[in-house]
Image (cartoon, rainbow, N blue to C red; front, side, top):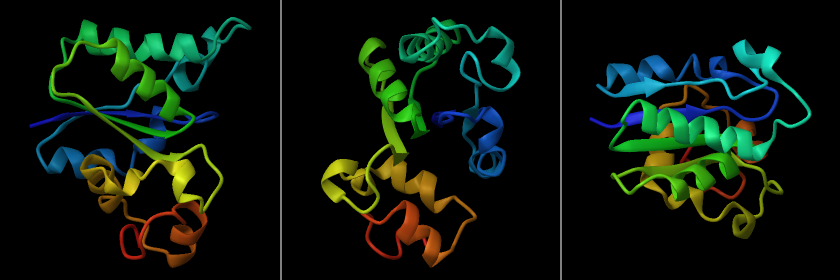
Length: 149
């Protein structure tokens, strides 16, 4: 089974995945939900030097230190650039990346890059307990109706 590495967006922590983690675990996957440097339980490490490069390094180090293979990187919002950059720095071991709710203008399918077509992104969103058409329009306006709601 895959290892899901769920990366939070700005102003969140790994705890933002608390509702999704048990669903993926029940499906037999290993799930890791780290907090990036400067957030959550690592808030005390925030300095002016902490930024995107630091957060990419957080994820790359975790993948390499834990010797992870068959990794599914899932990033919410700000974590999109984090996981994309991390995926480019890690040796190819079957990892894939999905940017859930990317940092884009809502409703612009060109800006979102067609995340709804990515099978891992679809799986992550379909596991979400949120089934609100309003939430779908607001956060996933570029996705076909019924994909997330």
